[in-house]
Image (cartoon, rainbow, N blue to C red; front, side, top):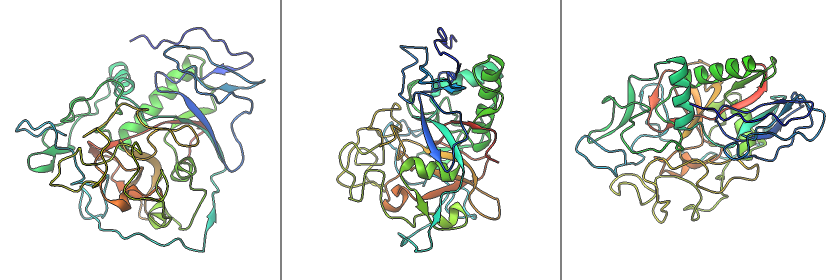
Length: 348
């Protein structure tokens, strides 16, 4: 596959092209650790494969229904939340109430500056990784069937519903996502397109909160912080306004948990960038796929964090910007995906 690098048009900079991932947006959490001076305007690498630098910089951004086995192709729904809601049920079945925001708020202290991919890692991106690295990202994936969420042999390539190359990849575990980031880091550094001190990784839970517009939250762990701040990516109204994102609206199977009075037109995943970006220019910070983060969800270090809800989310509390789901690092589900960030060194 031709990555389409194009000519490097950066001056006094290394062009971070993000191997057919997406555009990037700069996001600060605490003090800056990335070199200053990059132009943060998104550039479509598919049309303009150069990059822009706004100064003497070391880094610049790139010009970069689940069918059941009975044949039903419109059965996507929120019968399974995005990840584990308890440690007892591997598919996740926790009933949670809307929490009240605590007065004991803590300031974001991640002390990082990252370049966020403006959308989730796509099928075509993950396919390039698997093809080149021969990584096996199949096995034990949870997907919808006529019997509900089961492990019936679905894979990221065949999740049980139709996907285009520009849809977010699903059915990938936290381990798979980390392997993708490591591969891309090594590839970009070897090509001279990524500085040796920079890496691709998953966003931390705290970075993700800032990216969705939550600057302060209370709690010691992501699990503690979950659902304490009321509000959704689109605001406070319910049901969501038209075009808010890809959730389990009335287009999904009506006998399961769906959002009454909302229809986004996509029973399952939608192409990345199909809905309006947030104030930072980031797409799908709510809906489409739940996104893996770097962190452990709990102090027991059993589950990894998932943020953002997905196409299968129909319950109001699961759509809160502050909501966290979680799952084991090896879990693969048809509503799990991820996005990458570029940062200095490792988050953990």
